[in-house]
Image 1 (cartoon, rainbow, N blue to C red):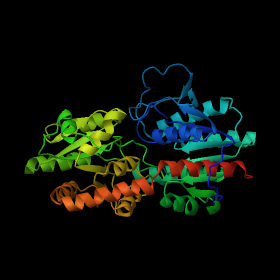
Image 2 (tube, rainbow, N blue to C red):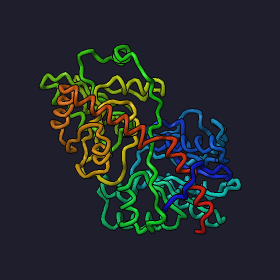
Image 3 (cartoon, helix red, strand yellow):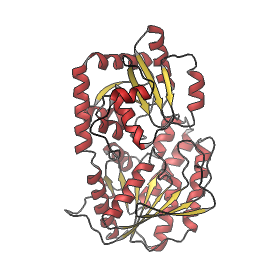
Image 4 (cartoon, helix red, strand yellow):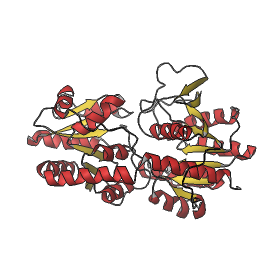
Length: 418
């Protein structure tokens, strides 16, 4: 879909956003949903959000969120919280149950008058229900694809061919039923068009952006001291969700190799997720591995800046399902990155396109450790990667650029005939 040549984004319409994830969740989809809603509001667009109850990545409702419905008004945005099922173990079927329970609430909730609706996938099945309700009211509706649902099922769960084909059929049906689709990467667009059968003129690419505020200068030594990191340690930090897709056992094994060889590399896993207890148990006795609980916004970015290397790690076989949201934050910090992924993955494409770091094969802990030590011993290479990542964040991954594009895209949907 080609966007109209509009210099100033339109400001004369009302929009509805349905998103299972929203602030105060700090990782994954929530920061993008939140920043988009607030950015559209600042442009004068009347935006209402139907959000789920915050639960990610801990997979339990945050304290203070009770009842079946909550009304909030945050940073100018009206938010209606809809209670839904939250699985204690986020496997495939329990997650579908969660999405369906949230989607049912969307169907039963009275929407305020909107010129256009936008829904985020995942949650795919809830997005399908948003499309169903929007079409029944004659409201144009767009789907914002953050992860490829069917591809993720194929790449991470080992589901049967029948289940994978069924989900692929459903995903294609839902996306084709929308007025328009936007995806976060050109690789996603190819899959949505070629594999899911969505008309190419209905699919647009709007990149995720760097949503963190990076201070110009920090007291690096003070931050490292506060986190218990020694001056002579090489800190390799992974931030974000600790789930199956991240395959963080690979980092633990790299730490084990480093510990046994006397390497100065210390691995740090920052964040939370359903795999954290198992990871902590498997890391027992590994002296150069640390776990950090999620940090506040004020402390999160300095922690990234105080590290020497930032890590992305993916399960072997993961290629197309997602582009890790942590990458946008990593680029903005100006720290070199190492990605342990498949060489032909969307993540590896991003590392090459940005020039921000090194790539190693997923599932190879010794190669991961060797790449960290290579960056540590080559400050010129590390600096080159840092500068390239920062430039990429400021040009390709601009928040203002993305929100302007969304305003224009939503306006074009509003004026289209489904």
